[in-house]
Image (cartoon, rainbow, N blue to C red; front, side, top):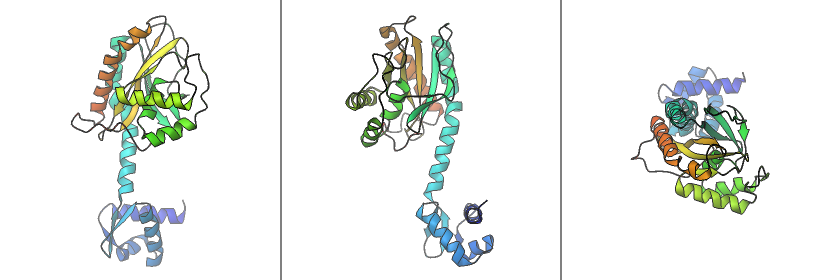
Length: 259
């Protein structure tokens, strides 16, 4: 391990116990105060350390933010599982749980449908943002400026005849998704499958993931798919409750990052 990194982590470990002075931290790390001060200034610049008054240091807000994000990402699959399993059992259709990562959809859980038609999806598989219902839900959760940035970077590969093909059409679709609270993939990703998706929210109302119902068109027409939206939204809300969201928290349809 890098010596500087080791010392910085030791400093954070000391500050986790209580506020410390420069002298106390130098003694704990076992180096000169000037070395500790350089490390503290770097940590402070990134908000990992916060200076209190003239002499004391405490842990900064960045650590709490990282901890919350890590817990949310780790827990959403587990907390959402009962609601998603129940949705799968009640409808008999395939249920996906997906998150946003590096400009793509990533499937993080899947409950297989009872019908014989199988979809080429698996946990860990990536999918496009512009032609999947889960992708639309996840991108619609961003602020408008971030949505526009993401939309401008998409290649808009035509997967089927229904695939969205322009930035303008995609942004208009995202606005509709944000307004109504769910998204539709009308045979846009695979021409024999259509899907509906809804957001799963965390304690602050932020979107943690998206849940979808995917149904072969031969089993259910588009009107039949839309009839499942109330069941989907109810499952998403139950999963949100289990993930820390409460109805009293003001809904925040826009988020600052991709988790």
